[in-house]
Length: 284
Image (cartoon, rainbow, N blue to C red; front, side, top):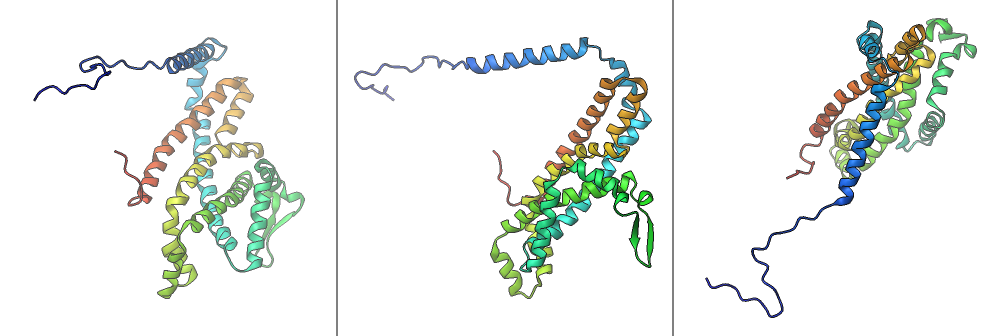
């Protein structure tokens, strides 16, 4: 095949090497970041931190028990928060103005006040209700009933329920209205359609933010230390009150939070992939 002729005024560039563009800004930014990380690591390594103390207390029984308490509290609070969130979201979408008002008031109250304030109020509820119970069935002193575990669970779950309700409501709204009409056409009740048709389709929208909320809940349980619930941060505080190794024990607690979150993150991704099968975009 004869060589192709070039138009007049154009140079023959065939066979010439292709020059790669050098991104000097990227290399400079990367070098600066590496230098800053190196300086930061050197500062921690050469500072007054006793890393032997960090290693010593990393697997201390009190710390390990605090991790277990943290995970238990996060799971229970998130479970109750999801149940409350579903109920409140359904109430918000109801045609009953009383249910809508109650649900909106609940969301407004618990989203509008700090969580640490709610925990302190629950822990000191005996100052308002000295006796808690059901008339004629069971009753007890509030100071005995409202233990740090119960106060932390109520505070975290009720607060989480307010946020979860908005996530679930958004997921329900995202389901096409035709799905509701089709469910009614085949004789399904609203509750039955919600359970069998709407919520399963809403999961692919609801699950990613709920996963993020659960990971956030792991860290939020640290606020329960103010009411003496023995989670990991409270356990670390008790130790450094005794040996004055504050920064070392804070590092221990921080490393355990990172480990738990690092384990939960890929599990969240697997769960999201499980519920998004058939709708997720394939990446080549």
